[in-house]
Image 1 (cartoon, rainbow, N blue to C red):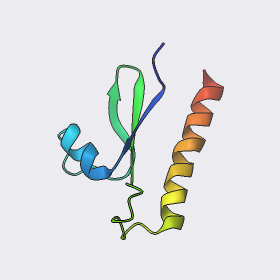
Image 2 (image 1 turned 120 degrees about the horizontal axis):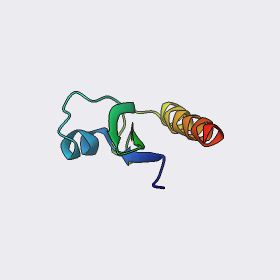
Image 3 (image 1 turned 180 degrees about the horizontal axis):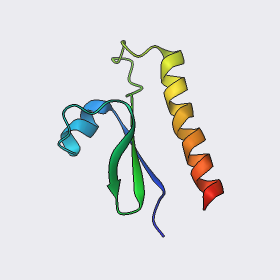
Length: 73
């Protein structure tokens, strides 16, 4: 069994890697086999338009989704 989730850190990295220029941060429709994909904001200090509380919230959303998926397995 493979991973349940793939987290891509950086929405620009996700857009380029998966040729999805309109993708937004969060869970993606794309699946790689059974693996779900989530695009996260880049925590780089250069990413000033994502304040720390918003970034923490987005990473927490992934954690909650991953925990729920683990319970369902």
